[in-house]
Structures are given as C-alpha cells and as structure tokens.
Image (tube, rainbow, N blue to C red; front, top):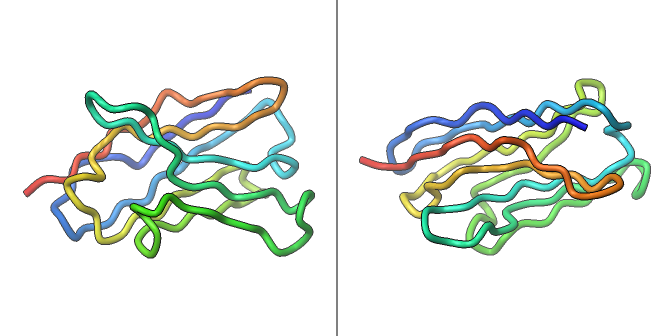
Length: 119
C-alpha cells in the first residue's frame, strides 16, 4: 500500500489549494479515505472522510471537522485511485502538514504535504 500526497504550498489567507493523494497497492474503490492534518506542537487531527461506493452504493458520504465545514471538500476518483481535498477560504490556523490515510489490514499513511497560510 502506498499513499503519495501532493499539492501543498504557501498561500495567503483567503486563498485556495487542492491536495491530491495518489494511491496504489489496494483496491481503492472498496475503502473509505481520510485526510488528517498536524500543526506544529499539536496532535494529528481528522479533517475529512469519504466513504466508498462499494459500501454505500452510488451516494458517497462525507464528513468534516467543524473547523473546516463549508470551506473544505473531500472527493475521490476511483478510476484514478486518487482522493482530493479542495481547500477554500484558507486561514492561518489551517497551516499544517496534511496526510491521507486508509485502513486496509492496518492504518497506512502518506508522507504528508505542507500547507502554509500566511500573509
């Protein structure tokens, strides 16, 4: 199982970024996918989750941390084995390393991508 995040960078407050997590080594369409983040000196926190179509049929379910609701959108492309996190209206407190995760036989994490929101 491999997870590779990309799309991080530096952006001003109010800006947008789109993170990608390309995966391999497992049947992507069968598993829920998660985005987490970890800010300096803080614990890693769950940001968003998206279920799999095989679990919930055509209608996927998503859930978000209260701090990002209405600003972030998680989505997936099963044909590309990739999960995305669209982040809009970014705030300085969104600064963190962002990780994607999947639970197959155990938890697997990507290496993370840095997001910095600063003026």
